[in-house]
Image (cartoon, rainbow, N blue to C red; front, side):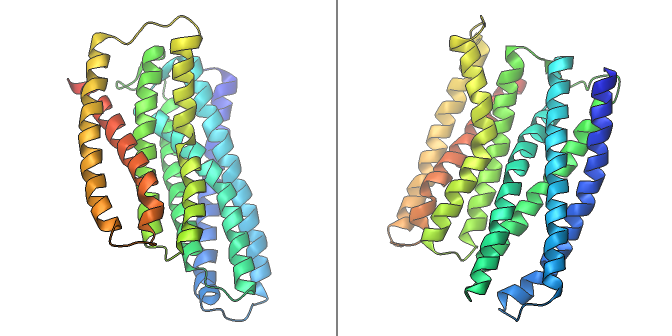
Length: 297
């Protein structure tokens, strides 16, 4: 590992410690503000101080995501090695970094709706879920960075050629699918109106799926328009075919049950969530089945 890359790892780990403190402080602040804001109590003088501290903490979290993802990508490209942990840390780090922008928007919406005398429990639920994602990103990023500092690569790592894009694509698909399904579950219990839920789910889904779309675009470019790249081997084609068929059957079965529930709930949140549910269910199933078949069959 070069001196510059090692320095980036140490900077990212230092920022990781600061980001962990920042996340903890913000969770404490939000826990204090949540009952006061949702009960529409009178604004307190301390709220302004809380706002300044929360803003500084958000900046620290954003810097950690930027440095950790950049460092992990640089290490992946330089060492020509990857692992499921590194791919997961990069994918979740990108989503978490994008969600920082969502945190700012949510806090602004909470403030505006509080001044208008409106209830904000749904926004608070999404905000706490976002910080759960930040904690997951901190954990994955820290472990991946520490692992990279070891001289010997992990046994599970694979050579960085077309195979690494194949593995990274489906590992990211699994993570993206699980996070998307978790977001849909949070939306069900958020208590938001169908109109507000549609906007929030749409924006959040785009943020969550963005790492998968980036890797998919790179993989497609290399295969069809980029540098010469070998076709998928026979085993990969068989794995994709089996995973695709199983995903189709499972997705259709789940959506048939969902349709039966939806037709009795006209105008409810079920009419908003059906497409994100299908998207993330199919993505998580297809990627997990493909990766499992590739590794174990």
